[in-house]
Image 1 (cartoon, one colour):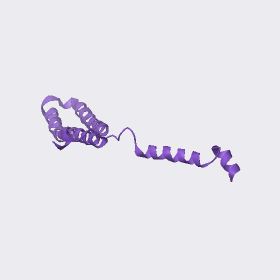
Image 2 (cartoon, helix red, strand yellow):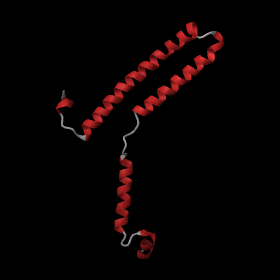
Image 3 (tube, helix red, strand yellow):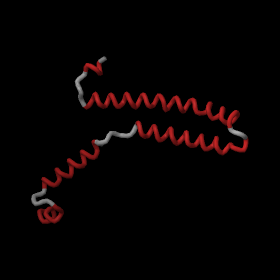
Image 4 (cartoon, one colour):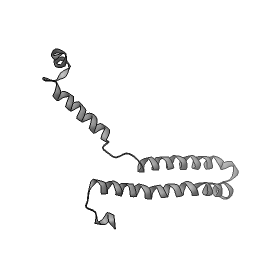
Length: 109
């Protein structure tokens, strides 16, 4: 109820994104816990002994998918503050030297 009453702001957007990432993490964790049970079921009852390559394939695909989904949902924001700081620092350096550029800075020194 606090989130619904709050005005729309950047902080509220971050909270909504954290909430959706948390919900995705619950499903990722559930699949990580249930996957070994499904693999054992497939190995013992569905796939014949000469098709164990399929069990290895399913295991590896499940591991890869878990990592890929976790990386997707927990990726950094679109704009990183580090890049904004460097952009501001570069523009500050240009304004300090009259005329701009390396040649003007060498001539001024």
